[in-house]
Length: 374
Ligand code: SF4
Picture 1 (cartoon, rainbow, N blue to C red):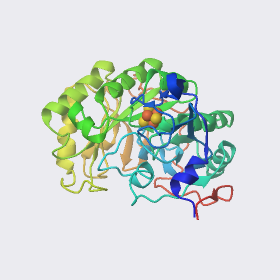
Picture 2 (cartoon, rainbow, N blue to C red):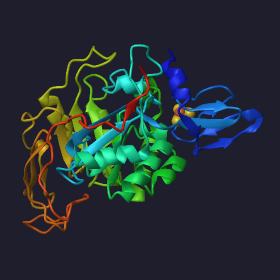
Picture 3 (cartoon, rainbow, N blue to C red):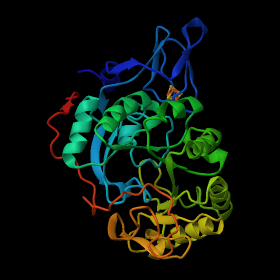
Picture 4 (cartoon, helix red, strand yellow):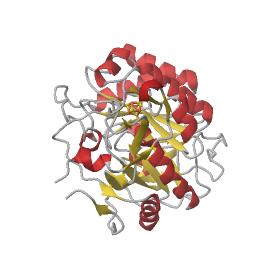
């Protein structure tokens, strides 16, 4: 029986995001590592590799698909109530000990992470998404930057079908990959894990490329939201949270910041789970830094008004939520507060059509997707 590595090495094509170097080496630009890769070797992510001086990249499969309310990504200022069809491949450029998607992200590093790839095409994925009623297609689960060529192929098909597209990413990008994605990605969620370069080293990265990516995404005009998983004892000091939120506010006070609760997962089972009081304290720091839209997630019903969207001008409640469930929606078709007419930053639909689902589910008609590992 073929190993997972052998199966994946057969599902590749030549990448777009690289340059050839002397002695058959290549340099990859899909993520901030910018790996120089000798012939016969993979990059840090293990899924892009150099064979004969050509960079080969993942192609033609998914590691998983699922339909979610867009609020789960989380996007709170983009098409509220829409169904987002999420897909991912395998592998990651970081190795976070608390990863909640470790079965797909660490599939080639950790023998305990067993995930069956499913052969598919961009057309099949988009047809599947449309059949489920999805309005948004999202590349997530593994780090989507390292599989950008596949994401763009899927998104080209998605755009032709009238869908919105999004990335849920660690933000470890490069100028090259962001320019490559720019025409095809509408929404971008960055998981800003810390504001301390030493912490990023523990996770296998550097903070510099991530902060540059956040700045560039905002300048490019993609709709950007930021999430920080609050891990007690790791990234929750007042000083770190203050610097993190002041950085975001210096780019734009209109960037929504989601601070979400850690629960024990994968290799990180030391810290206790994040409490509602700790989330609310972090949110308060974000508000003091000047951010207008701060949300506390993962603990529905326990964080008061921090699940709701308020007008930053008159404080009117514009969207009332319980977890992923939208209980009330009051933003005007033009994206204005109905009380004071202040424009509310975001991507708002011309008409709120209600919510298609308020809980995640697997697409139930997957006949076009065929498992290739058995
Ligand atoms: S995606 Fe990142 S980790 Fe993978 S080969 Fe390219 S630069 Fe290296």
